[in-house]
Length: 128
Image (cartoon, rainbow, N blue to C red; front, side, top):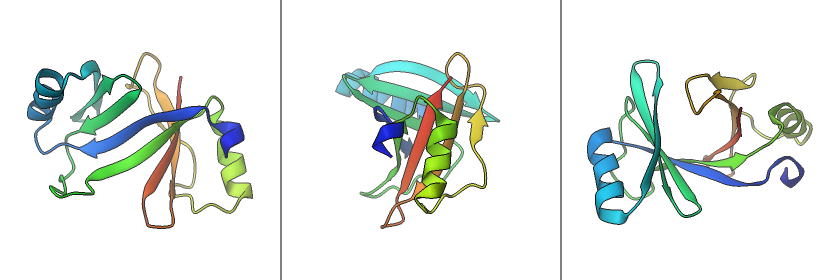
């Protein structure tokens, strides 16, 4: 899959309280708030520190334990080619088709997820 990705794009973490999470990471740790977006009735924030971007959102129950990272996202310039290659490799793809969230970033995202060997989620994401 390295032919279809460029870099680690973001890591996903459910927030117990999104406003508290944003305040903690920006005011105490020094992250920059890269954006707040809606996804249905919920909000999602992207927090950036140097090369690391954390996607954190409300609406799901936060695990509240070590290991609370929800997913790793790899940046892909061509989601269609990456999806086709994932199928050819026999990867355990979580969705039947490429997903989209049109309200993220300026023009939305397209993505799909796979299960890793430890049931971790690995997302392949194209920012449009």
